[in-house]
Image (cartoon, rainbow, N blue to C red; front, side, top):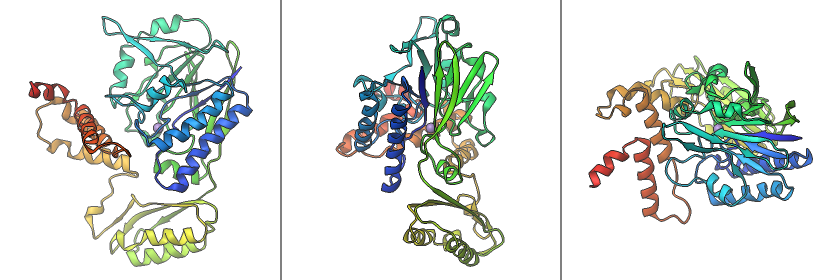
Length: 422
Ligand SMILES: [Mn+2]
């Protein structure tokens, strides 16, 4: 028997039509590979979609692809990720579950003493027992783990899979040192397979009591850094797990999303005009044809503004020469003359977190949850909530209500607002 474990597909993350098409194709290729490999089921450990209410075109195309699996009688099991989870209202994952396209395996009840009881979903064909914990808003996940009735889960007999969408403290990669994680001891022991999501690097781990902890990484790419890593040669794909009463073989199945090319350019000590010229000639010496090109520009310019380098124009030149998509990463480029460009991090999410952390002390509020690290988390949640664009066909009123509601929720001010309404 065998199953496929994938994660972090982030459908709908990109607006560019060429990358959108690659994103769609990556899932279709993976689905077709699963059918070819004759898997018994597919497990997706969260972040199938980039947002909880994605564009309907993206949803429609995703359903069409997932139906390929369904038509081949391959069930799909899933949990929410941090991206497709919504604290108030219905997520697209709920809709797909209700429609029978996939099965959400997190079935949780809270008992009178506040303990979280999880139930298993049994795959009818293989008898594999699946359960897990979806992502929650930042910081809340670990509270669920703290209250988890592990004993009951550990006593259950049979082949057991635990799906989760969190970083694990013991295995945290260095570049995510500031990410909130859950210690492995919060997980029930003795499961045959721990199917992870959330960490965008494929890797497998083993610890006493936890024989196989696996993160497939993104199937395609979710953030700018992912596309950069792929262009630099990081392999993308999913895991194929062969099992009987135990896991017998775990194998990474590559799913190549595109041909990439990567260039790094250090502008330190140059003025902006020199840097533009040098970068331009480096790019001229480079074959972009048929490739996704990612260029990282870093360093501190000795003079001039970073905006003196016309990246849009450099990008157009690469496109004319056949590049399928061009991305410049210039978050680490600054100028000595202009302090406003001071480096605050290597990618947008890091910059956001750092800026909030640096400034949270200056915000005067009475609610304790808006202060300190929790305040930073709330601010990040609020930023995430306000990023949701108005949907095609959604009225202005509905949209504004939705954003206000998710904003109140992000700041945990529901109680205050309800009292005010009385
Ligand atoms: Mn993700």
